Image (cartoon, rainbow, N blue to C red; front, side, top):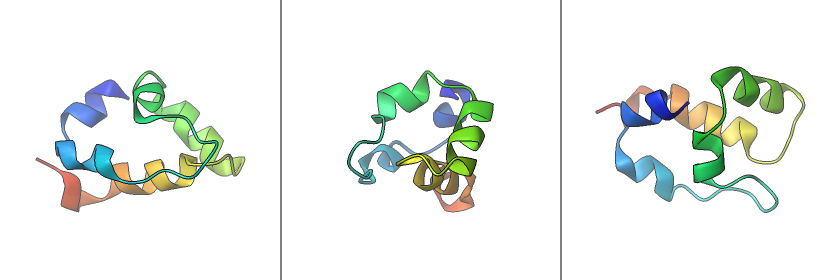
Length: 60
């Protein structure tokens, strides 16, 4: 996941995350598969992060 974040604009980390969700640093240590699984399980913040990372507007 850290490789994905490197290809994104730094401003992506300014996006607010829901309460009780992992921090951006914690998301950075996860695998993409973990993000997908968390989003499918409806865990706080995972859908937001998946959507932001998939959005081409944040590409460098």
